[in-house]
Image (tube, rainbow, N blue to C red; front, side, top):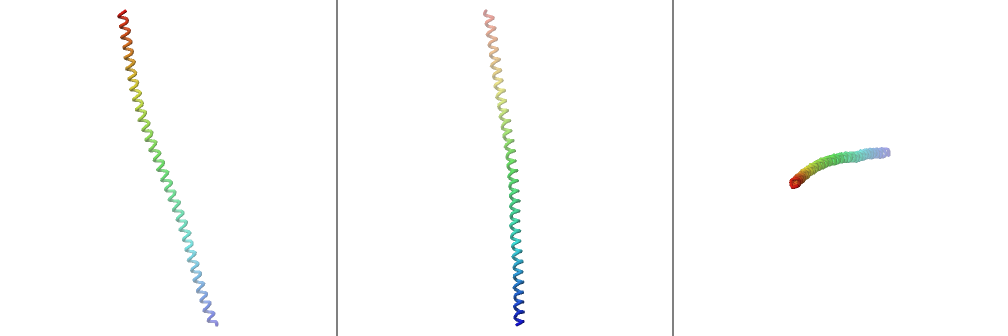
Length: 114
């Protein structure tokens, strides 16, 4: 009877050891899963930060290029308008000089004929 009890206790002790080992393995696997989840979360946050900063720098670069192009176009338009104004001024000057000359000739003619 004692031998049978001893065998049962050894068997229970063996089963208890298996249960403890399974518990330790499951705890280790659970910690590993939690660590993987946290690692994935950290990687996701880092990748999001990198993408947002790259996007921000891209937007800043695009804005700077647009600013320079618009500035260049405005300067080109201003130079074109300045040339047109100078041309209009030259035409007005020539027309006024012609009118003054014709008025001078008319005055001379009227003095001579009188």
